[in-house]
Structures are given as C-alpha cells and as structure tokens.
Image (cartoon, rainbow, N blue to C red; front, side):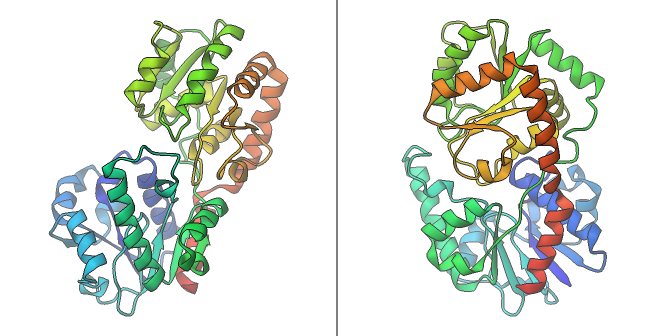
Amino acid sequence: MNILSLIHVHRLPNPSGVGRVMDQLISTHAELNPSARHRMLVQEKLHRELKSKLEPFWQEMPAETYKGSTSFQQALWILAGLPSAERYWKGADVVYCPAESYIPTKKAKLVCTIHDVAGFEDTLYPPTRSQLNHRRKWRMMFDKMADHADTVVTVSNFSATRIAALFPKLEKKLKVVYNAPHSIFGTPVEKDDGDAVGRLVGNAPFILVPGGLSLRKNAKLILAAWPLIADQCSDVKLVICGSSASQYMDELKADGDERVVNAGFVEDGFLNALYQLATLVWFPSRYEGFGMPAVEAMVCSTPVVASSVASIPEIVGDCAMLGSPDDPGWHADAVGSLISSSELRRELSETGREWCRRFSWENSARKLEEVFVSA
C-alpha cells in the first residue's frame, strides 16, 4: 500500500499535541506494516529548513513538496480542487491528512482527520474576528471532507458525536482512533530533570496543572478554587505548565502568592518528572477532544482530579475524581481529600495506570491500518 501523508512539518521538531499524534501514529504504522510505502507531502522551504532537526524516521522518508505557503496551498485545494494528490505521487493508494487539512484526490482513497470541533463551541473562545475567520475556513474544509473523503478519523466517541451534531453529512464517514501517551511518560525520572523539579518547587508537595490557563482549560474555576485549596493545604504549591493567558496568570499571582509557580512550556523529560513527582494532577478543562494530559498523568501513576465533561469521562473511566467544571468548591474538596489521603492516592494511582494500558500507539496504528484498508 502506498500512503501519501500531508505533513505540517513545523509540528515535528520537539512535537506536542497534533505534532506528536502525527509523529507517533505514522512512525508506529510504518514499523508494524513494513510492506507499506510511506511518503510525505510537505511545504518545500520548511522541509529544507527543518529536515536536519527531524527524527531519523522523518529524515529518511521520501518527500514530495509544494512551493507556496501552506495556507495558500490549502486554500487552493479547497476552493479550486487543484492540484490533486496524484500530481505529487501518481502511485498513491491512500492519501492521509493526520491534522485538520484536505487535499483532493482522483483515484486514491482519502482519509482525513478532525481532532475536535472545539472552535465551533460558543463558550470556549472569545468571539474575535480571527476566531470567526477560522470557523469559516474550517467549515469549508469540513464540507469538502463530507463530499470527497472516504473516511474521517477522530480521537474519541465524544468528538465523533460533536462532529456529527455540527456537521451531519460527516456522520457516516467517522471512525475513532484513540490517541496514546508518548513512550517517555512513566519511564524513570532522569536525575537532571528531578533536580530541576526540586529547584522549581523545593521540597514542597505540589499540584500540577498541565495545559496552562485559558478559557477552554477552565482558568476561571482554577482562580476560584485555588484560594480554597491554599487555605486547606498551607504547604502545597501550584505548578502550572503550558501556555497561559497573561490575564489569568496575573490574577492568580495578584497577591504575590509565592506558592503559585508558572513553569511555562517544558520539554517531555521535565514534564515526565513533573507528572511523577506531583502529588496530583488537576485538569478541570471544559472541553477536550481526547484529554492527553489526564492519560499522561495516569501512565505516570499520578492521581487525577478533572472535569466530568466532554471526552474526559470516556478517556479516564472510573480511575479519576471527576466533578462539574462549574463547581470550584467540589474541586477544592476533591484536591484536598487527595492531598490528605495517601490511601486514596494509592488507589487511583494503581487503577489509573492499569486502565491506561488500553491506550498505545501500537493499538492506534492497527486501527489506522483497518481504516486504510476499508476506506
């Protein structure tokens, strides 16, 4: 089988999020299916500039290129339907778009991906001009998928339900292929990373909030619940990693609270150490297509407090403490009970680690192969 994947190559160096899904899913598929012939379709200039920074698997993969900017080329594919994927590789049997993107085909099967439709949920993002423009672009893209894609992959049953509700023409084309944690999570903590965590928090126990502070990640609840937690647990610190909107971080630290630590973006090795050394992971997000931080924490044997909405109950099962995303008192009590009970932490640690065995890139790659064959 000849597989041409449309790759946003800038997402591959030090990948996270969608970049990690592209990296792990395609490389694992190639490993499990040695007869499959993979090529990538990439923007020429970016590929030339970034190739030396890619992992060997991607450096060695044959590449077909286009010259214009990615946004211009995507617009040309959507609006004009030109050129078709066969223009880049005549022998392609399957054209795979692992991120939200679309390319027309003539004879090759087309498999596209929609990770979630958070951008169409009215309560998750401020209604800016940029957001409205993104919606317009995605709507045209999803309409093209509905008309021309053979299969549309998404990452959870929840996400499939919301896609079908908002774009009914896609419903019969949807297939679920779960994400999985990177293999680094749950491995022994490197000494340098452990030392770095020590410099960040000292000897204090700490709560880890992955994903940063934003409206979607429920920053307002964190702002309301943290003072309640701080009153109950005077020696505990709050460590926030990922991208945070400045207004939320400024408000959280407005009183000079030295127990709040903004770690910002962190590399995987350091994040693995944070997960494993945290007393618990707090993930009160309002919306997740999959909810990778919860799974990463559970693989690291760390108990999780999260919201009982979107994909989170599907992904964590009964192995995390789940409550309303609108109830800061519940979250404060749940966090406090975990901090005070080593037995409860141990129970969630064990059940969570066992539950997450179902999420592996090998399982996901096998499911993707089924999609390619049946598309």
